[in-house]
Image (cartoon, rainbow, N blue to C red; front, side, top):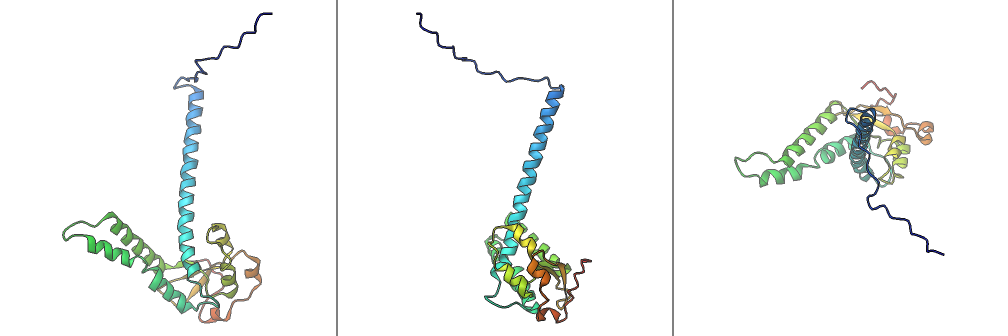
Length: 199
């Protein structure tokens, strides 16, 4: 019996099909690639946005008192003295490192823009987790500092440097414990908690 011949291996490999540039198939492949690029870009933007949100909410998470709630005055002091001033040291270092007559560094310009933007946001109305509400504070303490979706369960208020005695509930919170709980006594001190979203 003759030995069986082993199948020849195709050394050339499979040829990639080339389409005419004006063909329907080439247009379809182009649309597919554009869609993939758009999805990747939107995913990248979403990741950056979530990272920025985690930074903001992480700041307020670390500012939580060990027990109890903050008063509205303490919340305003936290925003003014800590949140808005957090880049001041870095800005001073950048200014000190710059020689006389030299233009501002990119980092210095960026920090100044952030500071101005946040100060304007606080002046016109800044949305923050409600640290004056007992049930909201208890829920906020359970956050793992990673999952941004958890933040949607919390109650948010809008505070402004233009009127420090007023705060408006901008998001009442989706967690069941916030729906059944009454406002804490600290909220009744000159605060509007009617859930008006007009601002």
